[in-house]
Image (cartoon, rainbow, N blue to C red; front, side, top):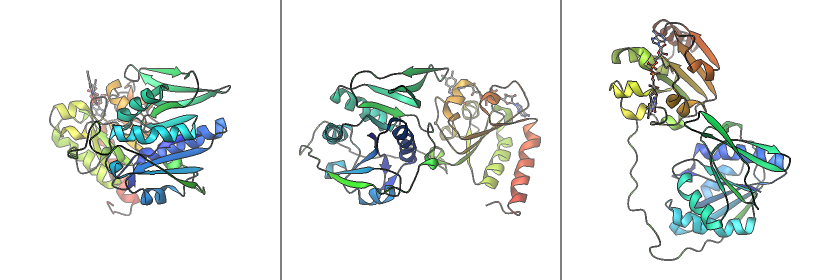
Length: 329
Ligand SMILES: Cc1cc2nc3c(=O)[nH]c(=O)nc-3n(C[C@H](O)[C@H](O)[C@H](O)COP(=O)(O)OP(=O)(O)OC[C@H]3O[C@@H](n4cnc5c(N)ncnc54)[C@H](O)[C@@H]3O)c2cc1C
């Protein structure tokens, strides 16, 4: 079985969950393995409802009051017996704040290998090969986990398209019994504080219009906001834009900002430095506007416009508005 650990918040599956399922469905087909998903929580019924139209063989609902809030200790304690019983081939979780927190603990507790931040898999004979990016995404490293499964992996957000998850399944829904010790064990959640965000959560925005130093000055960023508004997109920025205080920190995309993987990403006046690329190269379609034909952004762009952004961006906004019949939404 290729077993996914669902990630969710406020009773909604997070986008990474469908990305993990896409991976599991593809790997499951290649390796002749069924697809399973574990949902941990205090009441999982609405999550199970959301997931049951996906092509999944088995949904394992693991409920316990102590699983109401994410806690790495409870996750590991709840998951270990499930994995011992299911004996999966691969266990996949998101390379997210949660995934990078509990998966290493789970790997240690099971004494099994963990390959983290994977972007791709392949099948070599019967062996699973997982690719991860290293040195700030300058190189790819292929890893073949050794020994007996399960092999644990965290998948980078955007590595697999969540909107290509296959539906039409009739999953078996299994309730796993979860025993967690009463009282304090390890740690407890005292408070959940949301990170300050802009108007839109960049990590889940389907379209992002990002601007860089090529905009020259803060006031010029209005053309980025206008295109974003016409497209119904979120606005992002490269680091110099944030360092110059044209926009607040939460707009920054890249190695020291947010990692995004929208369906459509506009890089406008952004050169494509590696620290920016690592935060957006998982985007499905990248459109770059830059007057320098040698700009590295064109190496990752699916569509490139070599021209002055001050000419192209307003023209694009007008085109989008015209196509929408003069409506901006
Ligand atoms: C430790 C570390 C962490 C970092 N983290 C990040 C990060 O998280 N995110 C990030 O973005 N950067 C990060 N950086 C900075 C990164 O190295 C680059 O300096 C930065 O990404 C460059 O931003 P830029 O592309 O907007 O600017 P530039 O590199 O200056 O590029 C501007 C581009 O605009 C084009 N341009 C100019 N005028 C026009 C015009 N009129 N029409 C069309 N095109 C035009 C130019 O040809 C150029 O390609 C980090 C650096 C370090 C050392």
